[in-house]
Image 1 (cartoon, rainbow, N blue to C red):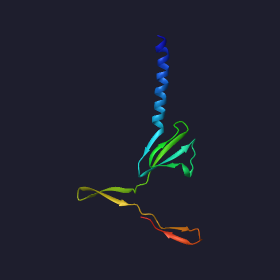
Image 2: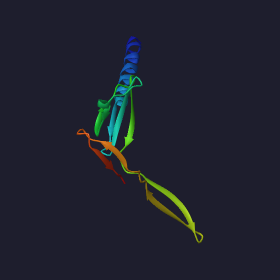
Image 3: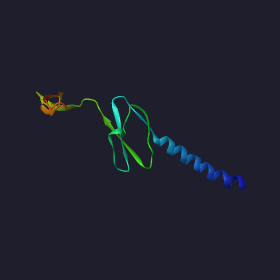
Image 4: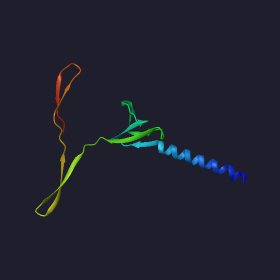
Length: 109
């Protein structure tokens, strides 16, 4: 009886520690990044990935950010046939200032 009284709490503690360790390891794909919030705040050096990332489960939270291009899919009906059309989102050209005080115009897809 004494063995069970000691072994049961020890087994419970081991199971809880293993569960915390498993939830602390995140696998980030090559096209993703993990933005880590520590107590609700983030900093530029807390963007992790790709690969295995370790976070503290109670104090940190990871949010996955997808870096792939996004397509807008719309459904149209022409002559009773429903077809899917994919279009690329185009952004307007933007102006930026370089470190040598030159103005540069950048246009993206």
